[in-house]
Image (tube, helix red, strand yellow):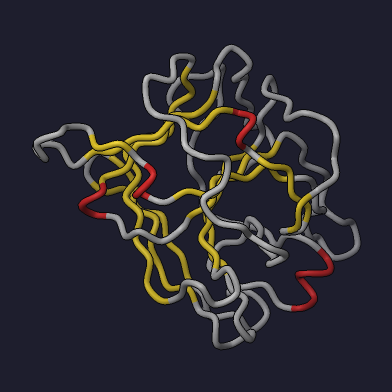
Length: 223
């Protein structure tokens, strides 16, 4: 919880995957709210340059149909030496929901559903707003992954629940490719906060810090 916000999020192991769940509050700060979890550590590194994108697999029977955001970062700066807060850098985001995933079986015998997200579907943002950064995402040096849900200015709120089976770097998009975005984030702030909703200060100053770890790091494959 950050600066008066009441949104909460948790990332817990569940069966063969992890469950991203919590409550998205929009009342406290007048319609804006987000909650997220991320990898932590300054020494994490993924070289995904040999792959064409990410394959996301979820358990549709244990997931709601809210819009979620997958976030990548290739640049992390040292914390501010005055207040210790993390300095903001460009994030690369893709919005999705389980309805965009293809079921693992036509007869309903499998509850797994997957989608392939090409790298060029990730859009650069800065402090939650579209960025004019002309450079490309450095796929040889991915430093952080985050999963987030946000209110889209009141479009969604309340309890959320997403059961993630895997996030895998893939070269062969056998799955249908989704459209570049499934919801516009407009100018609503977002970030890499744990149990957080942004206040006005956070919208100006950048991303609050996150706490919960998703272990990883390496040359590619399953994350």
